[in-house]
Length: 497
Ligand code: AHR
Image (cartoon, rainbow, N blue to C red; front, side):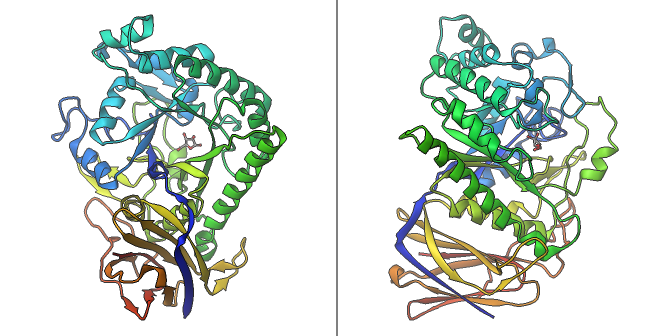
């Protein structure tokens, strides 16, 4: 089988904001306790953070991490997590019905983020709380000194402000499951007023308003329109969340779900621009796809977890090879919208629907989805290029005209490197992708990395890594044409310089 691609270094979608390779740590399950933080672990550092986990996060080059939730933030008292650790209260955490010990709080997480070289996207509670808690938090984290909250931070050992630049105004406020769930008007108003107060404390921050929790929400996309109508002047981004699964074990249909993600992004862009036109505004709202991933493997097990324990195993999806293919396609979709999607967070990072797992014996390992995430984060920096692809297509249960070859192209001008990311969604046929690279004369192949497996359901465990990439992919350059051999059901990274 054959597919064709045309590209040119002058046809630019936009500069890729590295924050699209962000991730997420929520106080949920074993993400914090037993994940990033385990003071009794042999590899724990002086603050109790696991160095093996820090190294795996660094391998992913995660530029920004959303924190502390998620659904959890909608009932969170950030004041519980500051000051002397032994004085901190244990609380009922209502979103996941667990006990939160508050051993890790804002300052510790800021320390951890420095260790992994990431910025923090901090979320405020607009479920059970509002303007006052949010403006006090930003005074605590971002104001230098001479006021109650900033001096309290200094008394806690943090002389310099954390200067957190990116803030989420609540989480999934459209969802009936959310503690403090709000209609679009209720949320739009509180987002507007909270955002106003936060920017009065620190005018250099950027704010993310909640959009819809997924494309199936009955209020999508009216929720976005109403919220933006009310809070347009205060906010800079609107958030999108989406998880996919393969419950019906229909792999062609599952792999086509990146088309739904693409449609979601396009609809949110149109909604933002409709409100922009309505307001005669010059300001463009950007998109923050701050929760995305595969999530379904652990659904049944989670039903059996008894409430009110500390850090129970929750949302511990064990990812297989086909999940890595869809994750690759979702990353490609983000790259194709690099002009408007400026932030995105793979949800989440450790143990909870995560690329990195730890067990209670002290080990840590990489799940299948770790690899496409790492490849795109490491090699996908620069400019996202338009490419015209002529690929054979298929129809599935929910989608028509699904291209078998899904691809994105990144040009790193500084390093003079070109990287092509491609998924072959055909489960039986290899496809040769011919790429016209005339505008990249003299470029030579560095490597062709491939993630492939005969078993779509193959997984990695603590003992065995069954899904790992190799760099023996078959690609050749001849007469200005690059020929990429995309084996059936494969994730491909082709690097040229
Ligand atoms: O990431 C897991 C959960 O998914 C988050 O807490 C919530 O925001 C979403 O529904």
